[in-house]
Image 1 (cartoon, rainbow, N blue to C red):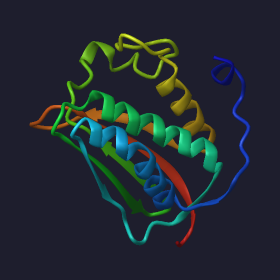
Image 2 (cartoon, rainbow, N blue to C red):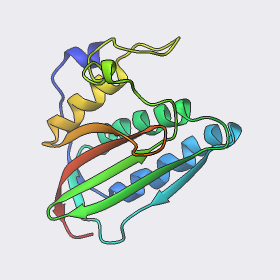
Image 3 (cartoon, rainbow, N blue to C red):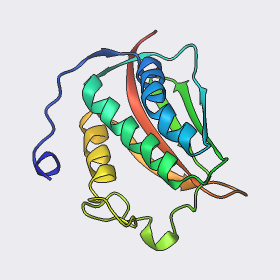
Image 4 (cartoon, rainbow, N blue to C red):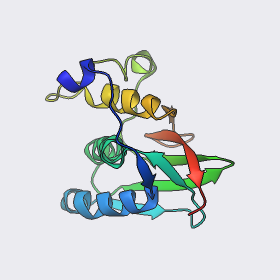
Length: 161
């Protein structure tokens, strides 16, 4: 709760987002594997680095990927993709869980909002606050013609990888 209420202090450096994701998949892979969930990275080879706080961006991505693992049914896949769009990098995390109902779409990033039996409801709120402190955006869309959602994080790039 303290982190949510305080201003975000950034300790920035050039960050390779693909490396952050690869490291996270190593850490979170065992939880996914226990549930029979495959995590499929589709990482762009020409992704620019970002001027960012690596610990804070790690936290944003960890939260989103961990939520995707929790939301996904056994035997499903989670796709984690990166792309360069001009001077912006985009990170997408696509799951095939139950999704987020329309009534909760606006509340999902509010502090203390959760639909989980346990949890604080701070994860997505903190992720939004961190992303916006970096000059970025975070949002999600329902998957078209299939269950689940795709979370999108957009960050300004700093230099070619």
